[in-house]
Length: 303
Image (cartoon, rainbow, N blue to C red; front, side, top):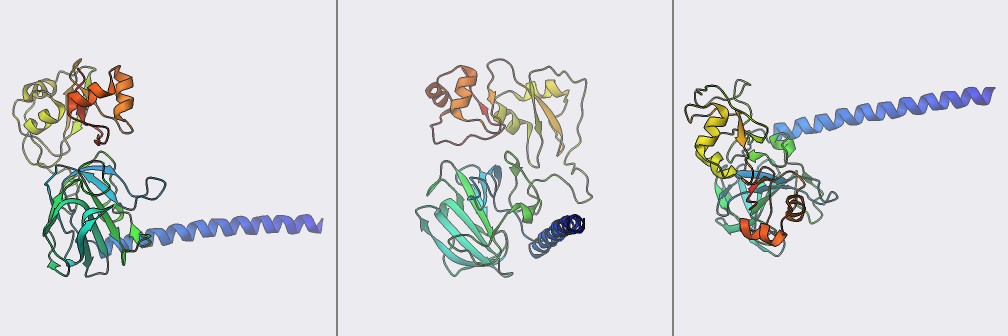
């Protein structure tokens, strides 16, 4: 009887201990995130492009964020600091390391070229180099790392860039030299309007994908991305003018044979099987090879 009572007390004690640990661990993690945000509150994003991979993937070994973009696109320092390394690495390719005044270090890898030298002082937004595909890389992108302290070979001080710039996701467009790289919210906390929009009756059918307008985008640029005409987009959305609003959702008509819209997790091989085409033909039609990266919402030509 006494043993049973003691056993129950022990169970209650262990349950209470577990709940307390979970509570305090959560509070510590939140406090740590808030502190990181405060320490990096003035940072701006290093490059324009699309997020192609996030921190912690590849069984936890990926210690940065990958941003795919056009080769030659400018890559900027996120904050004022000093260049502590600038060299050609077998793995990082052309790479620049910046130590910032608050003790953080940032890494900019796989550059096509470097414009700064070791021990050089750089300002926030100063161009460090150009986006490229050097080193151990399978496509044009910037590999960007943030270290809360010194960079080490095992990257023990690496933190998720989302802790600095807010939560993003693979396939999301990002913009350089912005505190809010996703350009989702204006200063007032509402969608930032860049132009007036005039619409008429909208004609939408089942064969649609939807594109969310980001800052700086034009109807012409979006039409090129989806391989259709500006007039087709205007017709599908009932647009009279070509002006757009940030965060506006556009219906993009996808007629038979107009292309395949890449989804997260797709590969060239899986697309070739799903569409019933030879993978070599698929690569030839789109100017790709097996090492070429493909991105969510990219439109591939399916002949």
